[in-house]
Image 1 (cartoon, rainbow over the protein chains, first blue to last red):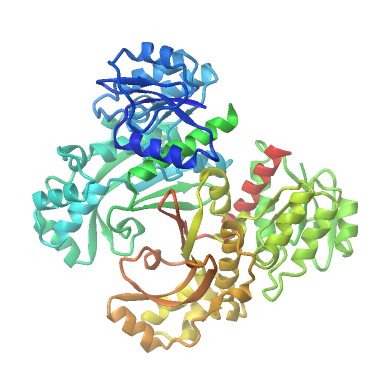
Image 2 (tube, rainbow over the protein chains, first blue to last red; image 1 turned 90 degrees about the vertical axis):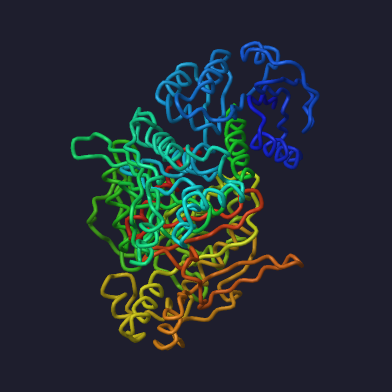
Length: 319
Length: 319
């Protein structure tokens, strides 16, 4: 199966390494890569470090690449999900199935993209967008038939977890951020995490897919952790509670959804408070199955790459 | 789709109620039920309280019932998994797909049953045997393609969790058992839980299915919680640790599997120690996806019934 990658950062490279290791069992080949600055093509499969040519518009890239599946993994634009959404539409216009690890399109435009894919009978998958490749969307789709998701709660952002853990031990916000950057989970500009935008985008994505919300990250009532003082965090800890940046989706009595991302004081025995380090936890509150919890323990770029791979196997089985 | 139930206790009755509520979307009907004392048949579908006739041997029951799927939910015989294993074989002999919530056959005879089902091209499903219907086996089968499970850890038994929590607060083993019985999770004879047999059977089932172990519960190095004193449990709590009955499967350097179920002192921040009340947690240690955690929050008989339903939908889609 011929795969075109749009984007080739750390996730793309981890994905390429994973495909190499799995080639014997799974005959997938990356035959084209586009980044902002360059392109590469080889119908027989590209090496991990391909010979690069000049960049071209995405439509031209796809026409020349002639792939069977497109994987969109450009870096996130948190404001509107572009240009990833346009990349996905360029693939849809060519009747190509799409996999993305980019939460922007799912957080900003899922309802429209789902309809466009359905109208063309194209598969569209996005397992890696929220829990770094842990089965969430595929779990609900494949393993929970007949179940209605009635609510969602989660601690979905690793950087704020690490920062709050540092602050609970008396260090400042800046020291906490520096630590998250040292261990490689925070960006040079950490405001996207600290201000709650990453969690809000994941919250919107979960609500769009699992609860048919048709919202954007801007729909989420959002408070980051930037205004929390080390004293407040330490006091919460001293009083036997844990401060965490918690995301919740609730269906109100009138059927409307309330989406929040905000610091909450959790009891120390609360499952949301007790997933350590960089691990994330997601709780799905359901009608038939009570509450189901998914924990992604210290996920990294390899797990995100695996989520793409799982989606790819799913698509390959259905083509 | 015509379903024959073998066994009609609390799980069977919850399953029958679930089918009634889902009938509009899922056309499944229970057309025959067998228990130790009686049988009932109606090709158009049985009511929740059927008119009972006399018991017959299982083969006769299946021949008269002529179902499309057999669901085995008799109560567990921990020593050898019988008569459930014979019930399953009686269904296989008639080329009928089987679903079971009974961990005995999976813990004692999975490797043989899998081979027998495969030889006859029959589907065999058992999602509810370990985590009360939470997706575990179906998660690995459907959502983790190419992944090898390298190890398993879990706190898999609710009764011992409740008992140890009571003992940590200064109460005796007997008082803890009485509480577990009051909230409806412990049997009149709690020794199966307290002595670790329930956890050992789940450990063997997980290892058989996910790590191709071909073991029985007797293969598990097993220590129950009966010898723990309230003082030891309280002391562990006072020292900032948590005592839990932990099950583990490890692959040793020589490829052999080590299976254990024993009380362990866990750090308070250990995920295994932090799932409260009657909730269970399972960690799958994998090659490609790091550690994936599954939490079943306060599961009850409805969740176990749902696991049967999920297996049924899976089989219906493949028939």
